[in-house]
Length: 109
Length: 121
Image 1 (tube, one colour):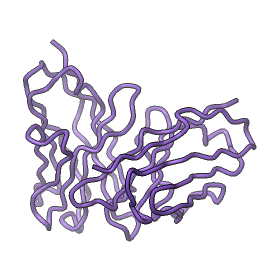
Image 2: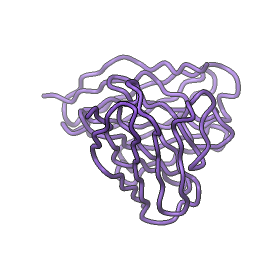
Image 3: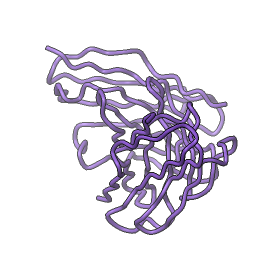
Image 4: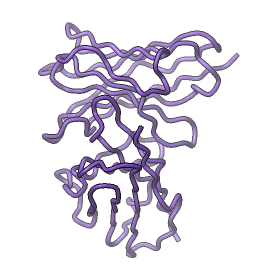
């Protein structure tokens, strides 16, 4: 089973500053990695897939990078609506299985 | 916009079963993957399993093998997730999620509103 480890668990950032979130895989998933944002009380929302491709309509302050086992989500200038929890998900191992990381919460500093 | 509509909240006793439904809009229902993801209170996302109706049987996370059954009814465009032998720790919001928002399988751009399942004696 592929394990995704996200760090840090919580990151404190001031509005307008940059946030850098990490997702490490226990084995290579090539570029088969997606990032989701989840706001309180809402289902997750897809931001990025293929490690670095933004979904249509996602602001360009969100960027993804990496391949293999190490991935990064960068939010270049945090807006108030960006304070949320972010999850990575691998889909390289499908079938039979998908995996989510444990999440990183971005909180206001 | 694709709206996945899930069934309402459920309360079950330990040892019982629960079946949650997820209705998708018509059109190519069978070609897309419907997966189930749960979220315990204050916790992260946990993949349970998924099905692509056109390909047949579902795939399940090892953790839930033998306890979860995911099916799809193509005549009603509805997917189901049944979880048996419920335990207190199965209390969670259960989401269905579908791919197809981008041209990459198993990337979920469409989510149901979530169904709260509470296991309580």
